[in-house]
Image 1 (spheres, rainbow, N blue to C red):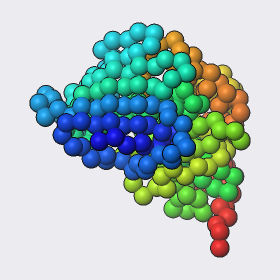
Image 2 (tube, rainbow, N blue to C red; image 1 turned 30 degrees about the vertical axis):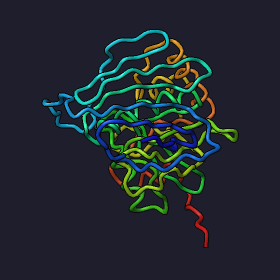
Image 3 (cartoon, helix red, strand yellow; image 1 turned 180 degrees about the vertical axis):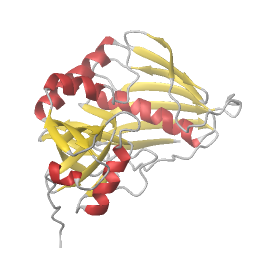
Image 4 (cartoon, one colour; image 1 turned 60 degrees about the vertical axis):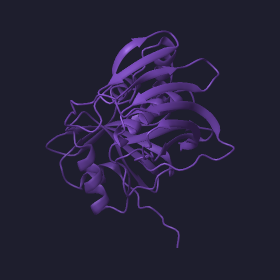
Length: 276
């Protein structure tokens, strides 16, 4: 099977052999005019040993080896190599167990490397949209990313864009949030593009307060929430360069909040104007 998958306006070409495994996310076909950003060859092996199944669906990959232009990754149900040469599409070859989440995990990782080379980042964050654009909520596990998005959607005329993973790309007219096609984004408007209005670093507190943070601190904090396994100097340099541009070009705030929809007041949320 060979197919082109759209990843935030880019094309990821997937070739799969062996047993059939369904794409479990919310993917659509790439446009014929889309730029080829990655080529992924997947061999599905029925004899792939994955007896020790972890409690979580998407355990982290471990780095089995790296060089200046390649990275070998492994986890209990998938292993393979990602290669990157300047000016060429990312190329990856993986063997996986016949599991939907194994294929999905590989797609996420390869997409993160491909996007990085086209001014794109994959973030562990939630997000909503109002009339001004997308507002991203970043924080450590348990900070309240899902909670704050849910509260605002229930009580304000805003729309949810992400509950887990989202894509940010620096396009010709500035930074945009693109709703990811990844598994776990059920019910969202996949592929939707919204201008990025703000990034908010979450802190649970006894009162609501929103304070702009320095570019230096914003860079440090956002780097903690990027989905990446980058080890090579080129990829690390691209990440730092992109995050620096992001934090210089988009306002970033520390958002102290109570678990209450009144946090929308300190954000100055604007009503979304819908088409009649």
